Length: 281
Image (tube, one colour):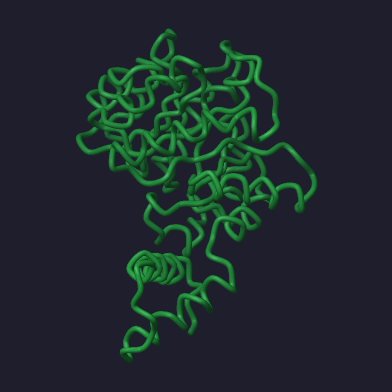
């Protein structure tokens, strides 16, 4: 049996998850550490983390963990592989499954067909990793079963030849943000940042946040806390929101044309601050 999920993270709705930790399904001895970490959501990875010859072993490791008390998401293989159907058959009805991440999503029917093979209501994270997927992002976001969009940066760069500079990836990120809004989904999840520097990671989180994305993938436990901090309202934002809301409740404040948007932003910051345990004013 597993010792259990981080209590704070377990209580947080997945639509508000900031850090999404990919845990290799080939290393079940590390599952406990992933589940006890500060990651808002944990994804057991049976796609990139497992070579073709080891897919069955990886799948069995995850199923056993979920049956033994673990809870989490599972990144499954894409619909065009021979492994997709076996993944879904193995996960159908398994306790502890919070949802699946579908690799290399390129069409809305990829999500819908995946959702149809799982228990009704099981959410599907659509991992968009190609030029075709980015161009179809709006229809993918509107597909039955889609819970959130995620950006597979590495594969997208390999597919398009784009560089790592934020400007080179701005169109793709914006496309996912706009598509998520059109599909009435939570903000999309950005790809991982491969660095040993916390400062570089926090700078990457600023890019994520400025683009309108609200989550970020990571392969490392030690990145989960910085990501959570980087994608949360800052201390100054919380102070500003508290001051405006207090003034509003007491009838103060200049009610000009910018007031309603500022009030809505303050209310959003308060709601997020309360959800993340940061609203102490």
